[in-house]
Amino acid sequence: MKVLRLTLLTALAAAYSTAGIITYDAALSAANEAPPTASPGIGFAIVTVDTILNTMEVNVTFSGLTSGNTAAHIHCCVAPGGNTGVATTVPTFTGFPSGLTAGSYDNVFNMTLASSYNPAFVTANGGTPSSAEAVLFAGLAAGTTYLNIHTTNFPNGEIRGFLTATPEPGTWFLALAGLGAILLAKRKLAA
Image (cartoon, rainbow, N blue to C red; front, side):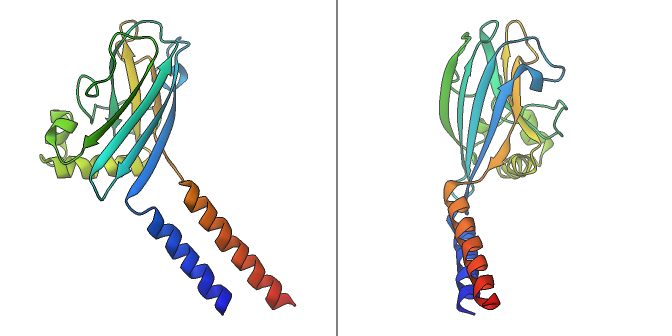
């Protein structure tokens, strides 16, 4: 009974420790564009959402683009392989480096502000920043958002990747601890 309580407490601690902070990532490539491009460009994006502070950090690195970048943003909401409208700022993320074939970017957006979104996305999704935030965060959780980088040679997008949730290291540790407790309980019951 002690082991069962320890297992339940471990599971609850795992859920509580990551409440509010959710990390998504995506490998950006030409093959992920729809239709695919012939670019050698690659990139990686990490998007960290804090549902308590209502912020979204966007961290992107990219290289090998065939021409200077003209825009970068997150699109929502469509199944992988599809195309849809831009959810975040247009034409590009605030402060995203422009005209480069390689670079990096890191910015935190206040998702309660209308300026963090494409006005058309806000209008189409309830008309307020909070309704747009709910749709965007639900799209991220469902795996129906993608981040892409547009360039002069590929104005519709040169590289992109669908954002998927990434378990936090603490969650893995707590899950393994819970599994260990279950295995220990089974071993004691079998003895």
